[in-house]
Amino acid sequence: MVDLPEKKVGIISCSGEACVEGTISRVATRRVLEKLRPEETVTICLPLFLAGGKEERAFAKCYPTITVDGCEKQCAKIATERYSGKPASSIVITDLTGNPGCSRSGRRKLSSGALALAEKAAERIAKEVDQVLDHWR
Amino acid sequence: MKTTMQKKVIVIPCSGIGKALGSVSREATYEVVENLRKGVTDTTCLALITSEDKETLQLVKTNKCITVDGCPLQCAEKNVKLAGGELAASFRVVDTLKENRKLKPKSVTFLDRDGQELASLLAKQVAEKVDELLKK
Image 1: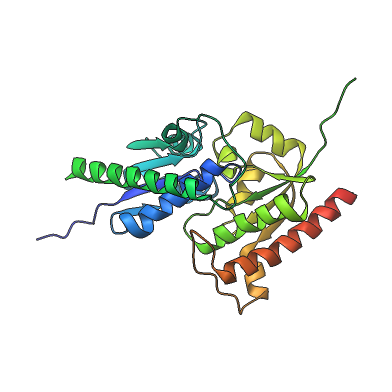
Image 2: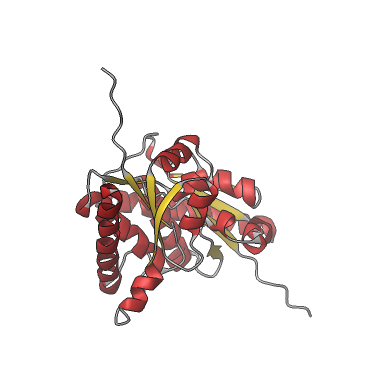
């Protein structure tokens, strides 16, 4: 029997350096990659879509993707759609907080409240990963 | 009375999420803009440049930019150049790492001690470059 390549989900975070929601999106993404779904997920640095080559831009064609954005500008979703392919799912941190604004304070070191939000976001991403994989199987 | 906005040096880290070097670039940037050269520097999300946000493209075109990249792929430098930004200087974490071979940063999400130390050393280099650019 032929061994088919293992299906994985690509998670693309905005990594937004300017605001705390960007830090939360990055920490949540790392949490999924390292702890919650390490065998089922991969990532790519978002700016590689422009800085890299064809291989990087083919990322969304190789993997169904989930974009994780800090704010409503949704850079990860926009850039993934523009340069790679339509994401299977998109998450915005400010949708989870119910507060549309971005905040600069706490972006360097997350408060306990922000860490709890990152955990909540990570669980949401993990659920989306499961749904994407279920859809595939 | 007409007021003019004070120009700042924009320090842009690489947004790297896969390796510790990206986290070092981010921490070094925060150390410069929030501590070492607070007030005369600022940062922005590299993703906003990648997604071609108009306001951010204007920001990098009208202010001197310093990019801080984690790895040799140099995403920050390449994205700023592609956006037509005013690239005044570029730093790479890998270069600072080569100068300090005893440091071996491993942790990605939250930097370990070696990562923090490397970020601190790099931040000092970036701050010196900021001073140089502000004198011009």
